[in-house]
Image 1 (cartoon, rainbow, N blue to C red):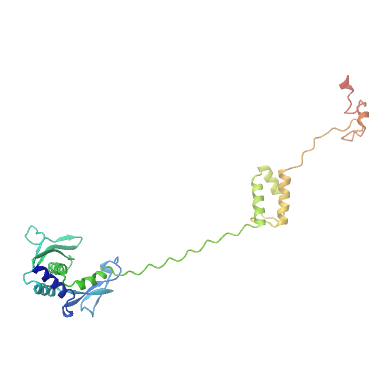
Image 2: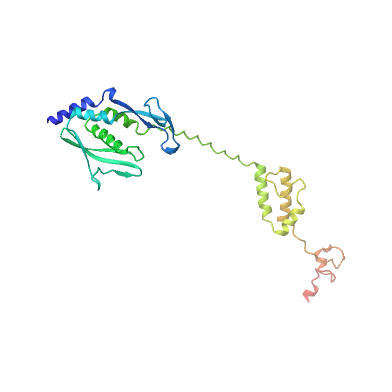
Length: 277
């Protein structure tokens, strides 16, 4: 019960640490997909370090300040790794160049899990891991929680909203076909349906005012001429059947004599005498 009271008191006292114990930690806020080698770096007047820009600055407690806070809460605090390697040292996992150390932090007789991470390229990765581990573990006991809540807000810097897609222009409606266009289309269909001999006739009788082939639009007067030509080709007049000259007059194709007289005249082609014999 006494331990719980100590932990409550520690959380109340150290949730928002004194300003003199708070440092500035730069964090890159540019596009995440930009390779590190292409990120610009500058000397910073806020945190007095040389880091990638653009960046935001987060409040944090350093390794030494967290240690002082833990001693203030429990002078006998301790931490121990969750696993050891073959050399008896705390086991550090390297995954794609990022180091991770898991450990137990014990404060006021209460043991809680903590984790520390850092890039493998750091100049002193072991110290970086332990410092991050202690900050993470101390936060589990209420130390610096106000700083962590601010950091969580900036874990993913706000991205610029994607520009609104421009409205797609409405497709232009095709104008309704005019009468001359429709007339030309009909005449084209009729001309294409002709057989080779009829097409040869069409080219001979083609209207002088009309270009070849049939254009998309035809003036009404020229369309009427072409239509007349197609009519004459598609519906030619019947070929007359030759009739021999009349035997009576020798000229007329049809006997001028009354039918009754022609039937009695042996020289008339209508004579039926031989048929009656």
